[in-house]
Length: 221
Length: 221
DNA sequence: AGCTTTAGCTAATGATATTAGCTTTATGTT
DNA sequence: AACATAAAGCTAATATCATTAGCTAAAGCT
Image (cartoon, rainbow over all chains, first blue to last red; front, side, top):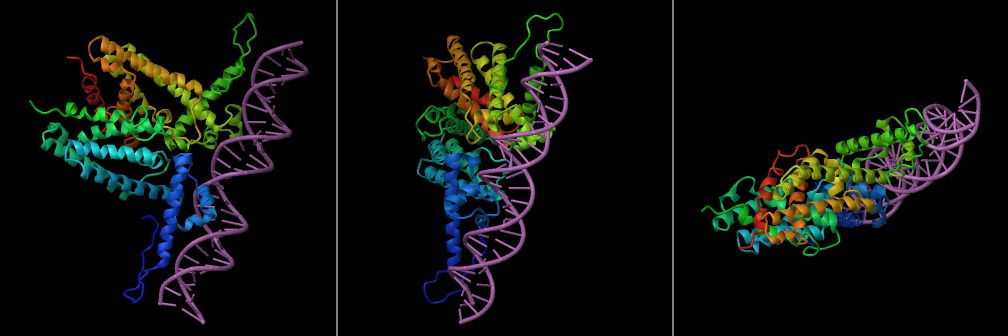
């Protein structure tokens, strides 16, 4: 859990039903902490995140943050979960707006790439494992699995439409695809962290790599 | 520099001319520190490296390490430089043993992959940029450039032999190739850090990706 | 209006990197 | 063999972290 207790709201009283104002303010503070944490990571690197710096920017003493998160790792955890939800939502939208099959797959992966370069600190947290002793919480795996599911669906569509051969239905097809996007992203983030998607030496390789998919999963004769 | 002063050796005395035993022991200690640092990084993650832990394992008080390295960053720097020399040497050997062209390119990249999974902590340091405030020293760029040169040479050979089309001579061909290997490595290191090259879901994708190169750089009709 | 929760604080602990300054010891020189 | 010295080690001290304990005051629920 992100840090919230159960929210108790009194049942149908008459007036404006502000159900627990405290809980709302608490959520606002939590969101503010996470925003600041993201900023710090972006400026100082994923491992440069420190509760002391967050407290400083929030205008509060460091121990006060423990009212909201039980540890620094819990902050990482929340950022991880939030980032993963965000990137999955972004991919889902992009894929829904494209023709099912190869186009949707490419649109989804490109959206993932664009998001990652726009949120590179969180992307590092998601796709690399840069923080010692940090293991994403089990619920985070759900989002991971959802990303795989999305890609598998698009690959299956592409086979159904005749864009890719039956090899794209195999278990491991999605690993090949994810290695392609991971390669572009890793190189871009590590070597050109300032540049957005579409600029620099690496992210422009993405369309070329996608055009290789039919060769990777050839149609039967 | 790694930390060594100029070595003074007395000129031609008769006996076994061990010139400056002190310098030798110093180099041994430096090597030992770097070995331990590698172990710590492998166990605790790249950012889990601490001089305190190194000192503990070396059986020495932390400040003593400053006789050998001016800072923790300098240790990272030495590990970076050493790792880069190592991986370039490994690639060079592997490529020299293979037929020039596509085979040499694949052999070199595979050697790089194998080395990276066998030295994943240093590989993270080399290929990602996980340590805040750590910028590799300028001399390290030399090795980087050498890796690019090796790959460009093999691509050119492959074109000369007729294995790849002229597109492989372009500036950016090497970035496409390095995105391929980086993708496999990043996924393997992040998701299956225990497994060696050849096992798991990602590194076995490598040969399939390499077989796509002729499609990426097609021969002219 | 009163009680309780909550959000904040200060103080303290233990880990870290790093600096300063002292002591010992190994090593090269006489 | 004795000695001078530079290297290698140490302890002590500072400053920055994360984290815990315990206190205080305000906010808001009832």
